[in-house]
Image (tube, rainbow, N blue to C red; front, side, top):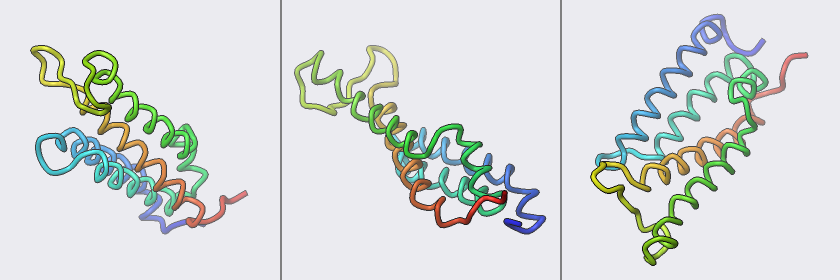
Length: 135
């Protein structure tokens, strides 16, 4: 038995509340406090609560991919967000570029990459300590 009845009943709601808040903080972070790092920590908090309540196996199934895979995807995305400046404009790597006439640019994929790296590494570190799955 992993957590109490209240924890098991609320695990999905807490997970989605944390993930929703983490995405809000992630997207808000370019112009105001927040961003990929703190958003990733908030998202990881929701998954850790889920793991404590339902077990790490249920959380790994909810993630669909191994947490380290999510971190690798994030690292690739963050690195790839810096390539347009290097390849197209001959500027230093990770100089953010903005699309003409649109309020978006390469900063957003960079922040999403940082979010996934923090989420993946935090869960890779914490999930083994949560406990063993029930048979």
